[in-house]
Image 1 (tube, rainbow, N blue to C red):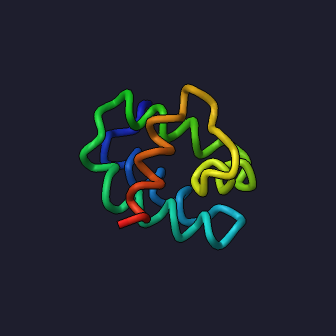
Image 2: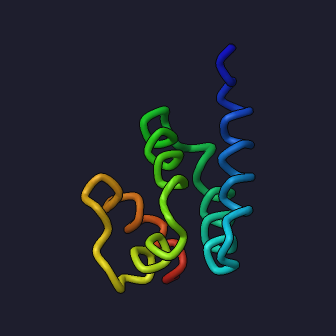
Image 3: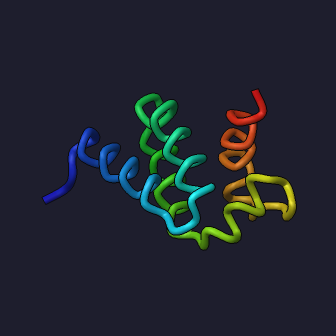
Length: 85
């Protein structure tokens, strides 16, 4: 059985707020609340893949300490811009 879009978004939101590093919990859960409902299937796939990455790497990418992999560069840029406002 495949998960519905609503169930998928709920799962991604839960995974966004249950990370390991409190900073990433805050950043990703706020981003997920604001943006997941408006994403298409490809965007959700990319975000789902991003959530499998290590928190230390994610934090360095979002804060601009290290350049993210090309496959995540647009998503990381969007996440980072959300918190620069």
